[in-house]
Image: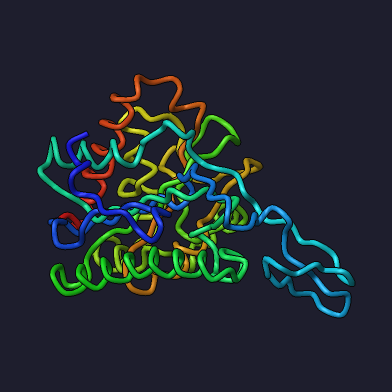
Length: 292
């Protein structure tokens, strides 16, 4: 891969990332659930959190025996197969075709050990080493956002990259739930500054109209996307609206969580899928005056 020499290793090799000073564009790629490494000395999150009988809240401590409470489960599924370097391939395509090097951060520790897309307690189970890793991952994102605010006047896009096994469709998460999309409630999104810039008189246009990312995925032949011009409502389909990263950073930058489908990706030559995905992203950013 072209980009391999541009990465550094994060805390204890728990993630890898592109050096901040090498990036030359206002795009951030984050892949928090791509990791397959399982360090033996880090406790598993699979035990779940603990809910005391008197409380409706879960607490997350790796050494909590939870004797008088009930366990609350956490998700520990890995999004991408261990040999699947999807985010690296996208990065290479940006370089090869457009001479752009985004900010990129990719998890290497497995979700059984840490979840970079959750609030810190549930993410780390309050283990000192996972706290260290988690803070380093998010410091990288914070710094990338800061650089974009400085260099590109805050115009930019953070893309949180995931994959799901729910069916043959892509989910575009901008904080709007399936219920909200189904009921045409397009209130608070994670792309407010994009909407202000590009669709000030018609939010729908940027969220699921002709300028929406889902529409560009579809027009580039990447199968069904929710929401988009042709598929504005997920209806009864399972739909993920975006997680911690989408919520946490959306006050400072446009954030979109793309949930790719195993099923759809398997229909393509991997290289072709990557090309189409990046082409769709570039077109989306251009039409919304985001690409710098």
